[in-house]
Image (cartoon, rainbow, N blue to C red; front, side, top):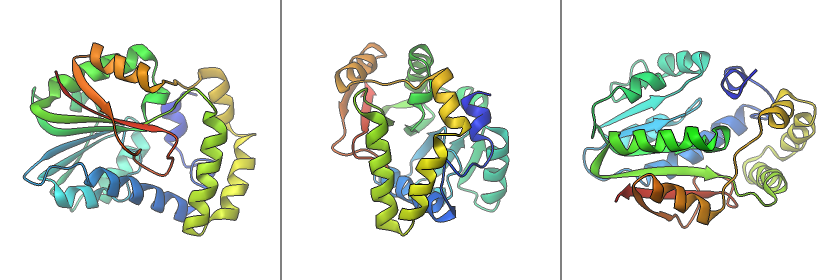
Length: 230
């Protein structure tokens, strides 16, 4: 099993219940929406997951392309947004084949930790080709190396307390210790970057970048970066 196949099926360790899932994606969608330019923008959300609130982003954009590698998740996205002409669902290969300068905004949130450094560098290079000269690339949920697991647990518990699923979150933290996620984390690992390391990687990929004031999503200890072509 790899990370894509793991996320291609529903697990109670990813989202402790349906409310957690829906609030999680709504929070992300609301945060991404704040980055969408006010005029007709083409937006790419790479590695979007279930994206149950993508319509909030699409409502502000001219068009939203959702990119997902997991086939079952991608099929569910296609069915969910079949009646929304402003949303399309693409495979990674289809997205990478789009013409240069296709997008005003490219977002990759909570994906970098599952990529090797070489894979991340390759995607940053592709995004630089796909984004318009004046466009923006957003890399969200970068996991710093220090205390990542305790902060993730604390963030989930606080998020649960704020949104009515605290005890379900407690149960989810217990289940994760014996889950395939924990086994995959041990065998495949997760990629971590300091702020300085991420800024250096973005600079090497041809961007001028800065850390955003706050992270996209519910974990304030992780980092989001905004980047433009240098």
